[in-house]
Length: 177
Image 1 (cartoon, rainbow, N blue to C red):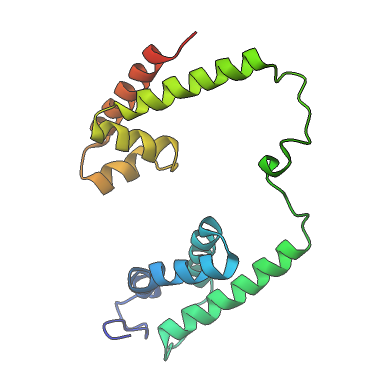
Image 2 (image 1 turned 120 degrees about the vertical axis):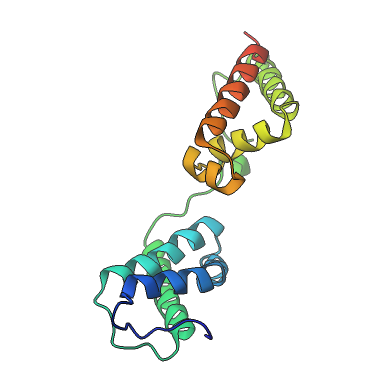
């Protein structure tokens, strides 16, 4: 790939080369692995594993085709993941068997109450200010840290904390019961 020198040179450590490769190819590698593994989350994890494996192994003398090397490593990792998954039991979503499962606690009153609480929560999230809602979603549903959110949104971590506190206080006030 033009602009990526994969030959570790004096004063240019292998880690710097991996950083260049990561920046240049991570998204393509992630998409490739998500397709191979049929799961976006597994694709992201596997792409990170490819770079982690490269980081902990001894630096090679040279890599003639860095993109090809990465994708060959990714292909091998995908094969390993699929083989490991083949030995695991298949998990089926409970929604597919909802009619067959009996729940002694699922009386109509409890279901109605749970739906009401969920509706209140969803409405509360919807009326949050846009930035506050975005910070809340990134933190609670995407699992991002406050520092990651701050960096991506170009705001301070203290502002992220304020948005989260505001969202939580707002939702707590709207929560029935």
